[in-house]
Figure 1 (cartoon, rainbow, N blue to C red):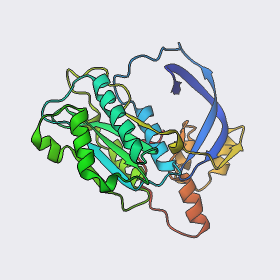
Figure 2 (figure 1 turned 60 degrees about the horizontal axis):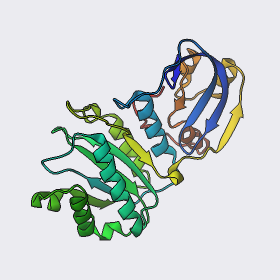
Figure 3 (figure 1 turned 45 degrees about the vertical axis):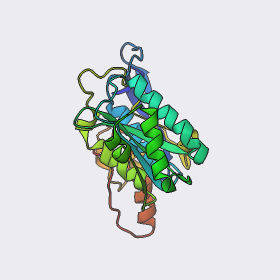
Length: 259
């Protein structure tokens, strides 16, 4: 069973498989199997949203070279609308220094305060740590001298796949996805600029489970597909094929959830 926009969908058979930079996705022919729900207020980070975020980070063509962390002082807002307004203001300011490309994630610290990680590339911000601290201090109207010194972090990334690796790590920290008591209007947990959106490499049309199973023969995902479990994303499948063609062994490091 799959769900889309609150509607229960019964999977009939796979219709196509698409290769992306690192993963593959399978589209299915489905039929409605229940009432269509209305998309309401975001109240949690759903499994589907988490998988979409991981997929984007794992397959974007963008190579990020900088990560910015933004935290709140001792006193912090408990309204997500105010928090996202602060993020929006920071991104608007950072664009002056080349941050047109970005991918952000929101988490909650154990004390209940939200904080952001922003991945970007090709900016001057890694040489402007004091300016970043001062601007975030002003945006959140902090007034806490300790927060001015420690409320932000700007670091250069050493690995080209840093965002994908962080996304997998992010998926494994459930306590940071739990909405603190009293926090309202949580809104989106992650987002990105338009140029971060992954682009497909190739799509193959299929019309049966047997064809999909034959096509994926020998892959690490095949047992689940033989059981006709409607897996949407085959993490690391493209990497697996490329490595097999080169006679290499693949070190799989996908998130735990694959469906």
